[in-house]
Image 1 (cartoon, rainbow, N blue to C red):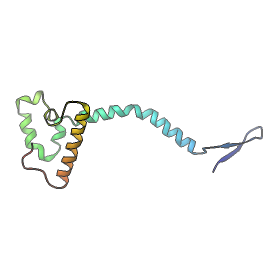
Image 2: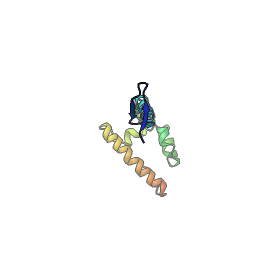
Image 3: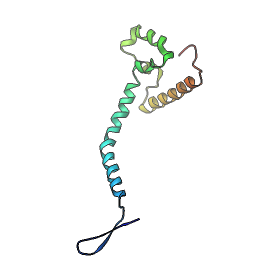
Image 4: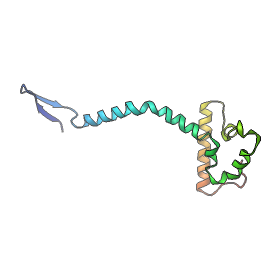
Length: 117
């Protein structure tokens, strides 16, 4: 329903949006504040799950993490350096997505292999 207001001069004015103009203003303000931060959160999450500590968060990876942490290349190689394609950002993200889906499926349906590759 359109709001009708009477101006001081006695003219009738119709407000096309009514209370929805406030909602649009709030969402617009929130978008202006938070959309520029989106790439930072995406990059932060991408960097966070590149760390070996992320891989060991799954209880089935404890043995592999211990082997890696005592190996000679622990100072220069993370899990994703060998287990995720590194050619471009697109192949890296596609590899992470594929691995995430495979790991989620294996964990949900108890199909975790005895030998982790």
